[in-house]
Amino acid sequence: MHWTPELHEAFMEAINKLGRSERATPKGVLKLMKVEVLTIYHVKCHLQKYRMARYKPEASKGSEKKESSISDLLSLDLKISIEITKALRL
Picture 1 (tube, rainbow, N blue to C red):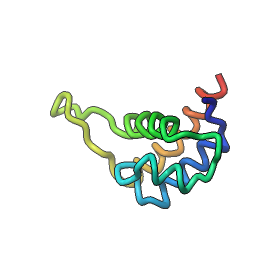
Picture 2: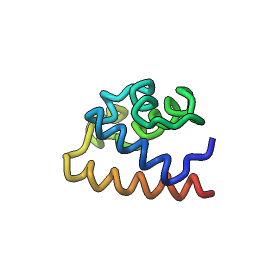
Picture 3: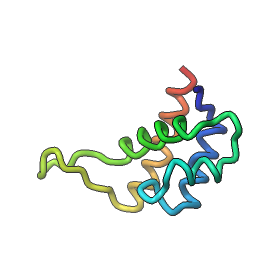
């Protein structure tokens, strides 16, 4: 499955409508996206990658992960979207 920038944008809109990525479910995202060629497995994989990219290891606690501040998350969303778009184009 090739995630175009348009598909990723629709994915991000669905995530935002559902509140945030931690609350979003693949089924909910799929329903909001209304894209016939996508399966729940496509969305599930993309959501998992998106969630993994949103968290970074905390230096003081080793392998535990912590969510950044809201302003950091907003800039991270933009960076992640750009990086995912670049990766998908490759």
